[in-house]
Image (cartoon, rainbow, N blue to C red; front, side, top):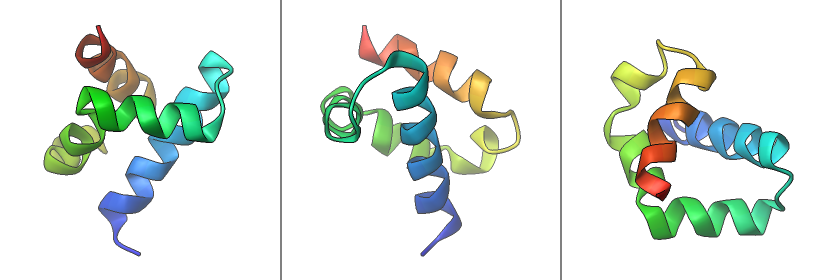
Length: 63
């Protein structure tokens, strides 16, 4: 498994924990909003900032 994919999974799990959603709901939300692609495309910058920043950053994508 790639580091990018591992980071995406970690972000999904953290979002799920913080917002009390299921894994399926969270994955679907990440896919619909483009958050998954954003995380994978910007992995090099995002993984150095910490998950709190990453989740705050993608919150804007989710509306």
